[in-house]
Length: 142
Image (cartoon, rainbow, N blue to C red):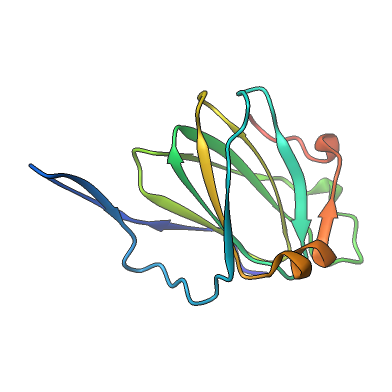
């Protein structure tokens, strides 16, 4: 399994407004995307993992804490693993690439936050690869 990777974007501003762009982000693997808008900042979504699916996360409104953890190899119990913590926010153009063999959990830090999630699997493929863990499986920092 590869490591979780932060893909940095760039912001350009002039009298017409601001543009955020990710010219180094290769989207050729992406087959679908969706947006998550939590109802409040106390909700933690996770842990959800995939052995084969890769995902990318982009915060376009507000901010989020995202924790990732390696769940490979499948045959071993991953309970003793330590999650990696990332903070994404609308003012810093960053895409978080989470490799296959990972589980994620996240929560918004501000009301009205919105998270875009990109996937290299169709919904049917993703559902067959879906693994859920109780929230208390790993001690993540929120």
